Amino acid sequence: MKHPSFLIAFFSTIVRYYDYALFGLSASILSKNFLPNFSEDKQLLGFFAIFSLAVVTRPIGSIIFGWIGDSFGRIKAIKIAAILAAISTSFIGITPGFNMIGWTAVVILTFCRMVFLISLAGEVDTIRIYAAEKVGKSHKNSVNGMVSFFSQIGALLAATSYYFLSDSEYLWRISFVGGGIMGIIVIFLREHFIETAEFLTYKANNSDNKNLLQAIKDHQQQFIIATIISGSIGGIYHFSIIFFATFISKVTLQIDQDQAGTTNIMLIIIYAISALFSGIIADRTVAMKQIYFAIIASIMVLIISIFTDLLIYSPLIIVVLLPLYSVPLQVKIQSLFNVGIRARMCSLSHSIGGIIISSSTPLISMVVWEYTKSLTCIFIVVVILLFALFGAVVKIPKQAS
Image (cartoon, rainbow, N blue to C red; front, side, top):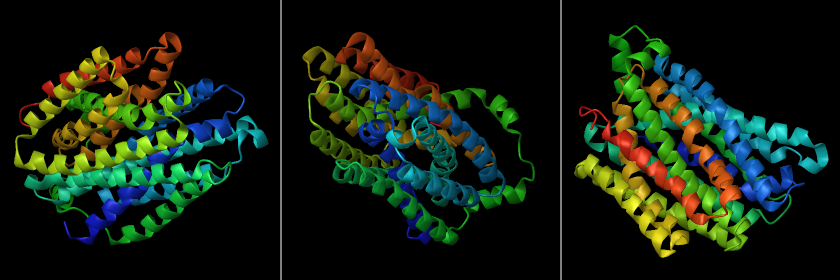
């Protein structure tokens, strides 16, 4: 893992997750600038509606960049996606607010997020596939854990940037423009990427490129399993790290904005460290036992918290346990599909899971709060996600487990 390709892949991951996390972590400042004529809770509800709406474009990116990745190589898909990501992130930073151009600002914000998510679909899953294909079978979990670790370094940079720049009406824009600049740097660095031997070997021995619809039909059960797993993991992550601290600072007022920023940083650091160790442990033990243990433990923590009035502290433990099942499960998802359809199937299942489950979780949580005003009911959403995840894991074919 000393090859420059790995270093570039890890740096690319940092930049892309910086851009991705920054949008969600900036919920309060973006909602204030682009939806100023509403109350605090209605601003957040509107923001997370945009957050959920934009993700419907992600499958477009999966189809386009997945096809490029399976047909012409993982590297080409990653390079093209990087260009779109850098442009869309920068535009968020320079778009005037609602007070200057009205609803046009909201339209531009939503469009930029859509373009970014199209590019994200072509990059995030492809980088994980690229890294896993670069190493031997005995190190796939470890390298995926490292990708997850560096993804959280990116999220940590986003949280830190937001923490220091969000107080100003204009300084927050530097965070987004800075993300675009880092993206441009990554574009030049990717000239040093080397294609994976696994992909090159497959293409040398297989001239056909199976139609996407046929691939889904032939792997229907695996595709559904991958969709539920990806969506559930993403939903739990969004709830615990992106949504909850903002919610309890802006809506329930249990902590202030500075405490929310500090909480986000702390949770991201915990997730990153846990992800790093999770991959190492999974490669040295039975990965499926680790997965089952972590999911069941997460369910038990939430149930106990509900009955002991400790819900506000439960995300801390959930975030510790999350990588213990998410890191090895991402490798399991890759193993469900052969090299010739892997990029398309992994990316598309991730995108559809994101639409149905992952990105909609904050919005669903806000809707549940609007109707119930109950913290317990919000956490029941997470319990449901964990049970859905457990049910999908049980259905993973033995050859993949």
